[in-house]
Image 1: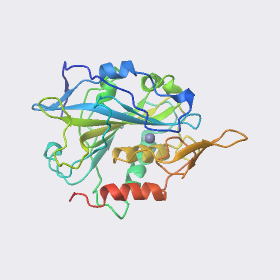
Image 2 (image 1 turned 60 degrees about the vertical axis):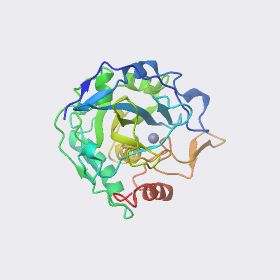
Image 3 (image 1 turned 30 degrees about the vertical axis):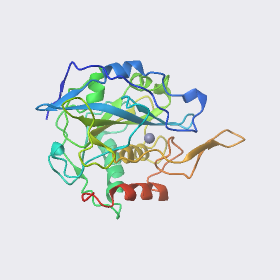
Length: 300
Ligand SMILES: [Zn+2]
C-alpha cells in the first residue's frame, strides 16, 4: 500500500540519551533538526496515520550507539512493540520483512550477497526456539523507505512489510542523527507508530507499550561492507538491526581497555551499541531479551 505525506505539524521533539556509557565525542545531536523537520505524520491507508517515534543506531568502535526520540511524551519514554493480530497490520499473526534489492552501494558486494546477509540475520532470530513469529519474507515491490524519502534521499513511500530493510544511504543521512554521525554510524532502525484520529500514539492491547506500525532499517554506504568474515560484516549489523526491529533495545555496558583504548562490552552481545567484531550468533542476553518479549506471541 502507498503512503502519502500529510502536511501535518512538525513533531515537537526531544533527544533522549538512553545510555550512561557514552563518551563526549558521540553525544547525540542536540536537536537533530533536519531529521525532526522531516518527521511528519504519514497517511497509510484511509484515515490511518503513522509517525516516527525513535531511532536506534549502532556505531563503529570509536563511538557508542544511541537512541534518538523524535516525539515528546513528557519525560517518559515508553517502549514500543507490535500488537499480535493487529487489524491495522491486516490481522496477521506472523511478522513480515522485505529487503530493498535496489540497494545503492559502492562496497563491491553484489545484490545477492547483500540480500543473503540480511536474510541470514532475520533467519537467526526466526530460529529462536522460544518464539514462534513465523517470520515471512515478502517481495519487494518498489522503493521502500518513508524516512529516506521524507529526508530527500530518494524513493517513493511504500509499506509492504513489518520490517523494511530499506537500503544503503550516504553518510549525509546519518549526519542528521548525530553530529558527524555519517562518520561513525553503521546502521539505524527507525520505529514508526500508529496514531489515532487525534494524532496520539496508541496502545490498543493495553500492555504498556506503544503500538508499532512498522520499522525501517538503513545501512551507511560510507563504510566498506563484507560478507566474507571481514569487517564490517553486514550480517552482524543486519542481525543487530533486526533485533531492534523485533523490539530489543541495546544491552551491555561499554568500557575501554587501558593500553589501546579499545572498546569492549560487558557482556558481549549482538545488541551491544557498537561494533566489536563479527557476531553472527545470539549471545545469552540476546536470547533472553528475545524470549521474554516473544515467547507468548501471538497470545499476549
Ligand atoms: Zn543498535
